[in-house]
Length: 104
Image (cartoon, rainbow, N blue to C red; front, side):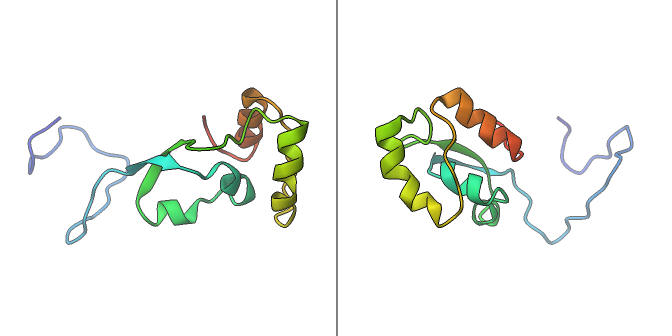
């Protein structure tokens, strides 16, 4: 770390002028429930527009670890978004999210 208002000794590749703007690190949503929303639209615009850059998911039901009974209840609500649940384990769910550009 360097003291505020000092010049770094090395040149940056990119400099962003932020004078008059508020600069802060991203927020963490500790009770996120976007497991399916991110599969439907991976841009996560509602989170990003609020400054949320990290989400800790799960409070309540799980998007992963599905079986025939849970899939029968879950799928009708996802049909309107043309989302087909093709996973039954957490590893398979993470693989599905990884294919659209998200990290676990």
